[in-house]
Amino acid sequence: MNPTDLPSPLPLFPLNTVLFPGAVLGLRIFEARYLDLMTDCLRTRQPFGVVCMKAGAEAGRSNAPLQVEDVGVLAHLDEVDAEQPGILHVRCLGGERFRLMQPPTPRDNGLWVAPVGRIAPDVLRLPGPAVLATVSALAEAIRKLQANDRVPFAPPYRLDDAGWVANRWCELLPISLDAKQKLMALEDPVIRLSLVDGYLRDKQVVVG
Image: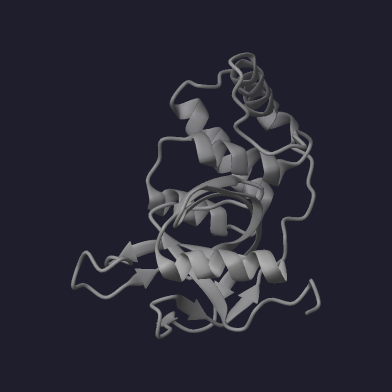
């Protein structure tokens, strides 16, 4: 399979979280359908899709039908650890965004799939002078976390990339999933960073 192709339909992993491009996602896998999915992804080196749930319960904890957001992010396996039989701890990296072309449908084993279309990656845009304080605040946050032996983001740290800076702030901010989803889906990285900057200034996290 050409590495630029995607499985069609794309296997989906609905979660109560919003994955951003470039983000690190840790998962504990124990359901058979997802253990099989991880095995397939390791074999084919293909990603799966992470979509945020809007309603329903993906694992059958509710009678409400599953509803997910239309825009998700590809998850690429980075590390897999078989700590104990039947359980995998995996580390994934967020890749490109995609848009669902049809609502997800379950396979016989319960794995959700859907045809998707790629969304173009953020165009590289330099952060403007008005948001440089927000860039500096993120750089300082990274330094403090590293000083405590924490590595919150996958390198390289692209502080000269408006989209990257906005996405990393979006991971950190205590905002609703709906707000995070809207920010992730915005196709203009400069607008995304401007909205983050406005939030940080409103909360007085960034001044000046």
